[in-house]
Image: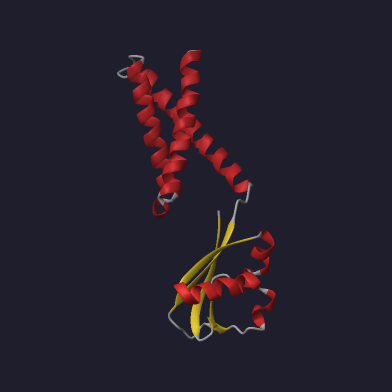
Length: 167
């Protein structure tokens, strides 16, 4: 493969990887490994076909197939590298509290319990009014509140589900 084609393989593979990341980031409900592979393959195929057509080698399978495979591998590498750097930097954590139907597995939460958890108290008071609340929390608060994640609590007579989202 000529140097010109190798450079374009790297460029198109990187664009394909970032495109795949952007698509998966936009549509949370389709985030699966199989979807990632399919999207990476499709975007690599699309960019490879466009490039092959531009250099008039679209019908040359001895060029097109290795070029597409190389673009796909660069795409996967770019996606993985970008995702790895994104995960290394814990950007934000959010406490999500929402009002739910009262059930038997909900634990009673008193004002005394909340004395050490000011951010949880604020979220519960906000959810009392609006039905749900999402509050940005610090890494220290994230660790401190870990015993409440995924739990149902009763506060002022209403049941609330407590979750966390880290982005």
